[in-house]
Picture 1 (cartoon, helix red, strand yellow):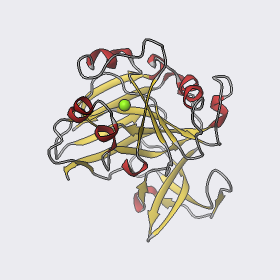
Picture 2 (cartoon, rainbow, N blue to C red):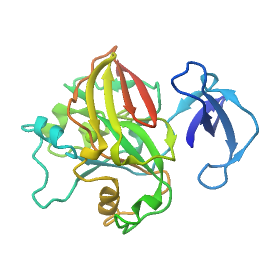
Picture 3 (spheres, helix red, strand yellow):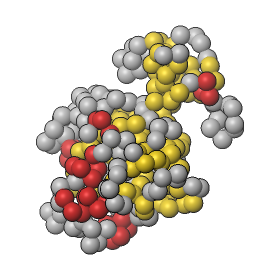
Length: 264
Ligand code: MG
């Protein structure tokens, strides 16, 4: 099931997305009353997806991110960030909820921030309150998956030592285009294109810490809530964004998250 959140005539609602994304004009959305996690009731209406404005498919309280989770990306970051912890513990950081934007919303490059990079990633959307999960029961707490762009002010990330500013600017967490609830995330292709030029091309089977392990680790110290998002890390190929670019993150089985880039 693909669940979108969208605006139409001033109202915001959720809906089931149906149709073939590869056939132009084929996609439709069946609006729901209520929240899709708790009491989804189709209104009976079906409208073209092109007639609505897609929003970020979830409004998380927590956006928890894993860094340095693909070996090829760790290698390309040598000199910018330290390597993975020798303890084997995942690198974890937060992005503020206010950094979340939806499909087609502009990524706004902060003035004077220096280099700002794209990081295409698989994102996990949580479906049930989750604490002290095990790798064995973690996936039962997942609502679904979406695509994310962990936009990063690389120079600030390096100079600050802490990552909050470099990762936390407004608009630095595009999510979408919708949540796919029926998906095995163990081996999905994750790509990122800038102006239709392929920059990143990885597979989730190469995650150093896979989705169950990441959820078990995060919930060993904090509660994840329904609608929260976990960004799983980015493969190699990160690179700078410039005003006028269009950046697209595609995750196999989900779809493509597209955002223009502008100056703030
Ligand atoms: Mg990242």
